[in-house]
Length: 190
Length: 190
DNA sequence: TCAAAACATGAATAAATATTCATATTTTTA
DNA sequence: TAAAAATATGAATATTTATTCATGTTTTGA
Image 1 (cartoon, chains in turn orange, yellow, green, brown):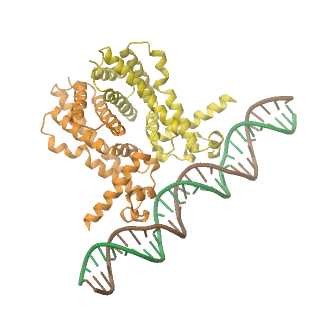
Image 2 (cartoon, rainbow over the protein chains, first blue to last red):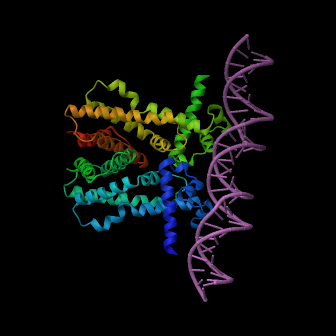
């Protein structure tokens, strides 16, 4: 039954992300993942051949779900709007589930990552680079090395979402999304 | 003999950082650290009681060497100069040795970190917050939530240094330091 | 110069953790 | 509804990796 399998996979992935948020990839144990997912450790091996396969599957899924997924639906819009939409979705999603960043960042350089998954990472950065280059041509964006701009954008959003998640009190309101984007946009606009 | 001990500790720490850059904290093995440091694995246990102790000692050392170390020598200067000096030192050091960031970030949430080391992390962020608050009072800096500003600064410098290190060709010239700081300063100045 | 102390080695052992598998339970199908 | 198939269990086993220790080497100090 597909729904059940999907439910289980979800259970396992959620448990893995939660644990990664607490103990990092270094601290991930199959037995703990099973406990967190409320299943027996043997059950994990019905769904994944090994720990390595489990983590690679999760990495793949997260990459596919992140910002690149909406690229096609917004590529006809003006650049600052595209950036705003991406910012909004990315920040909301990252705050909802900050474990994603931790998992993605740590797994990217872990010894378990597969070659296929390594390449996924590069695609989104290319999209962003093209978007910024276009913005420069249209005189909307500072004529500065794209990598510097990308570092500012990605570094800011990652660090800010991590902060928001770590502070139990703070909730991500639309106001905060808008203010943080304004700060980002002011930094890069011409 | 103190010099020799220091030399060995350095050897071990350097090896650990290099390996962390390659395989993350998740991939660190004592045997590999020993191999990378060109010593026998048993030798590690002459200098450290355990892996846990080794990693905590390294974390402590890195924290103490990073930006906070220069705080006292510059605190009398104007705010934008203080920030520029910190930016310069931090970016140079991070690029020289990007493994530091990876190690610091990953170890901070690993299960091996001690409580003492966890607290170290908080100190620098407090210093930066105070500096920014002062800047706001002096009307130099945008009157925006400090955490948002800090996220932009720290996120940008971390991500940019990581980028510089990963691109074999690119070298961190003074010009790049100045340009990146300019971008950062424009983003936060009033 | 030589014995004692300190330091270093890496194979052997212990500890931690991934994985298997005999058994039990649930779901599917005819 | 009952047998077959699929799914689940967790103690037992295999594997990986940290740590020890008997032995060898270098350094120190009288």
